[in-house]
Length: 450
Ligand SMILES: O=C(O)C1=C[C@@H](OP(=O)(O)O)[C@@H](O)[C@H](O)C1
Ligand SMILES: C=C(OP(=O)(O)O)C(=O)O
Image 1 (cartoon, rainbow, N blue to C red):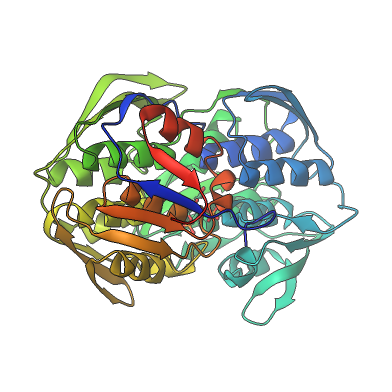
Image 2: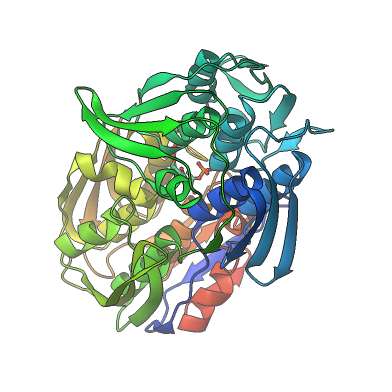
């Protein structure tokens, strides 16, 4: 089933060269944060280039439910009239975050230190995902949470009326957990300290500083500490959201595996905590060039140029790189199937708790397409079959996971026989223009099974 309706089966066929420019939408992580921080500032935040995917639209709706005025001014252009730190109102109804782990976990953090109660739910995928990783640190502030067994949604949070600041070492590499604790720390007095052992995406820290919060980072024995001073008055901002590297990954990967392709993907955010896939692809021998490197809105940006790369070879992806490409392993697994030799991916246990168990979903689909895949609890090896070598000819289950759907549709563009997905509906959560954008490059997609 699609997130918001009947399943949409879709098929990709071996295509001629992909050519042209692929202008992908705004960054999903930054879009969520722009709405949430805008809601916590005093006055009007203006956002351009906001991702209008379902995940972000659900966060916009949630911010309205907590009392902020959120207005769609035109394509990508939004304004938020914030209510200030500690200014959230109690929502009158259940907050439905749809398919979005980022949305629900960050919003839980943002309300956790205000004296109000909110109940959260989501779609069948989100209701399977663990929320204890967020409610455990929030309990240290004094927040209470009651959910289904295993810390699953639906879940009610009773915000702390007299929050205390917290020192917390994040036990799993997770920007969502780090961000939830920082957002909760905003309305606690004194200094809240979040320590991460492995660096994860740092958009929350960068944007909090941009909104005028006082925070600093320090090296401590456990890792990198972020020290936030609570109860600031956040100053509204004008935010231009950079284009999403996690969406860019799909046209880039498709260009690398489809014979004769040459695709430009302009204006992509290349924050080092997000750009791990592109480094990995280059190590595999991809013809992937950064053009026109520049800085926009405090983030490094470049135009990516990807050309067909028939001589890519499998590598061992350094496990310490995982946080900077965590959402890109599904599409990397597809590229690996078209490289020569094995690609080893280790330290990727977090993939098992995303929108689907992404190790299992990729292994099952690639095997159905004729590739040899080995997997363990936190690793996967894809044995590549070289350019054009993947047989294809399968229908792959996407399990309400946009990245699984897009990955197998890209595989079908270069496989010998068509590749179908059982439901392309969830693609609308992060990359609503995927089908049209890829078709404009020359991708052959049809609605329905092969
Ligand atoms: O903070 C964020 O915006 C995100 C963090 C990551 O999740 P985890 O924090 O669970 O690793 C990532 O997978 C997700 O797509 C977006
Ligand atoms: C994991 C993802 O998102 P989220 O956790 O926000 O659902 C993703 O977009 O790949």
